[in-house]
Length: 278
Image (cartoon, rainbow, N blue to C red; front, side, top):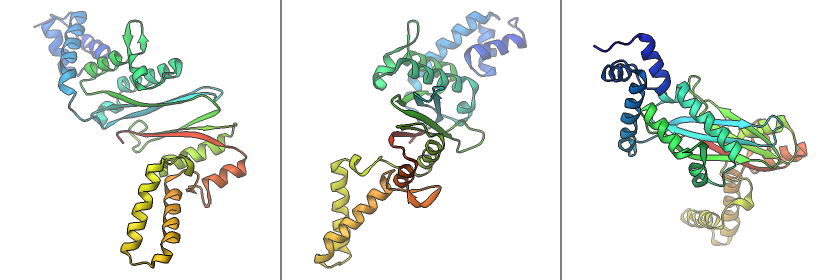
């Protein structure tokens, strides 16, 4: 039997994130040499990366990083297969490092982010693959948002107390107002608007909604003369539900979000909402 101690097993687990039994087996095969065991576990992990490609990664975390002066901010979604891994310190450390890299590198899009170097000679894609190998689960980075042109605020929501945040919201105001930023971000987290304003809804989406409204109204046997008014009413109802500015404000449903912003004298320039796996 190889000569190693419980401290060696602990050290190996800290270095690789592998399970206890895998660490013991690796140390047995490496005759107690921790460095060789690390190499063996990483080789084994990398071989498993391809096998995990077809698996579903619907758990994970959303992490945020906001500048002290709220001038910039990012949210990043990192996915994994199980909530057990999502709770782990190593997984959350990887997610935090990715958020810090996004804040520093300001990538144009996901492709640019994955191709950028997070460490000397190591791309973000390689960094994620390494996490995949070390943690023994499929790890996926495929969404992030970054704002840097106003007052930026992030709200992070935990759907379960023992899990990291599963919903992240990033908002950007034209001027500083922490209370309004927080309230609107919480509203976005709860009500998941698809668009900021009516003008932001794509024309093809509007036309599809109009067709559905027309067909539904005709199927209900409404008078043809009343059709245009009813259709427009239903279309306006869609805008009210789908756009942030049109929705009744979560903290005062007698006012729209647009009205709350107007009363505060601020403009919401843009927002991003990420929910893990959705």
